[in-house]
Image (cartoon, rainbow, N blue to C red; front, side, top):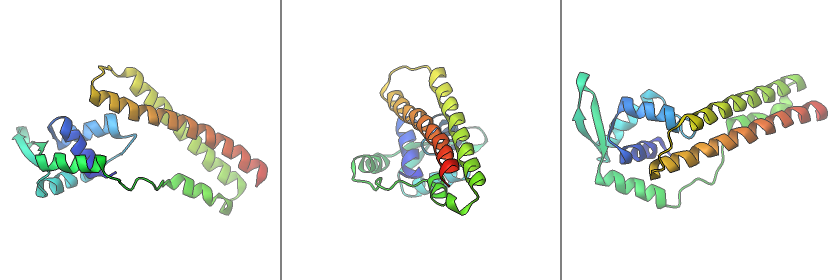
Length: 173
């Protein structure tokens, strides 16, 4: 997945300004594909240059609203239905776990406990997002809910695994 396709997907739902897109990233995509403001605005310029989005309106303080073009919808559809390269799983956290043997046992266990704590916090945050949402049942929201539920279940199991791994490291290293 790329930021390009995340933005195209959001704009396929509704035209938005860069500011609006950032808010939507923060409230719905942050657990799936986080993005910084500079990344979003840079990608908007690239998408516009490529003809995949266009300015559909201008508001106060030269605030531009973007909409997806037919070419942008075609790009999004091709990405959605194409074979993709999603097979590889990358995790900086697990790469660190792979090399925990290079640290003293206590430091490795502390890393895992902190990793567990962060996942427990993430789990609580995502549950609060889910529980505070007004679920209307429209197709966009159903898919957002499915992705949110993936984050909820994943953060819970990852936190439990990290606690277990800290115990294993302490006992066996």
